[in-house]
Length: 239
Ligand SMILES: CC(C)(COP(=O)(O)OP(=O)(O)OC[C@H]1O[C@@H](n2cnc3c(N)ncnc32)[C@H](O)[C@@H]1OP(=O)(O)O)[C@@H](O)C(=O)NCCC(=O)NCCS
Image (cartoon, rainbow, N blue to C red; front, side, top):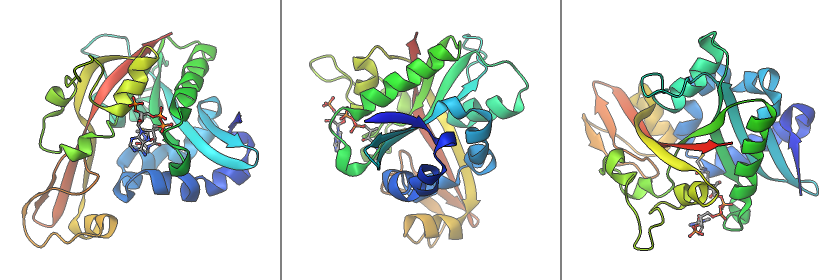
């Protein structure tokens, strides 16, 4: 298996949505604000940080990340995924850290440790890019089963053996990542109810708070508009 840059492999870039993101993430997540605005530019502006893992000819995993500004203080910490991403394109500041955007492993290749390989690749890219550390607004994979639990509580859940409750956070911690903050408003989406209905395959007939499969927190529907605030957990990998 080898890692290649998407910027050098347009044929892989052309199939990545169908093979990976479309099947690894819920549909609504493909419609977030910074992604709609800047995803395409990631490959042009930051080609070293968008990588594909190929096994022979097959695309099996991918990572996306963006160098962004953060001076390391609590006051300057991005609120989450949206701000980490937007800051890279809109702040005009020099980047200090690499901010993870997503890692996906093809479903039939999950559970075999490829995520560690991708995280290692992200850390190596950050180091090669002269960045101070890798930070990740982690989307905890099991949080969708606990949509009513505040992320500040979930971030602290540990098993009896001391390891984190969440499998994806566990992977980060296993190779040296540290939880350093909750990100209760990591990704904010406000869209017409008709769009939420299309993305989720559910109907939202009246105003209310809805539990939607795969969402980490409820969807709030008011006056024809659906608001979803995705909570994440900040992890850092010092290099
Ligand atoms: C999260 C993800 C990147 C992990 O990749 P992976 O290569 O499967 O990771 P690993 O093989 O190291 O497994 C990680 C942990 O998840 C568990 N796991 C992996 N695949 C699983 C599955 N299909 N169902 C349930 N648990 C699974 C493993 O048991 C392991 O937990 P452990 O600490 O008990 O061993 C991958 O599952 C994925 O692409 N998910 C969809 C996209 C996503 O949510 N990405 C993360 C947010 S950016």
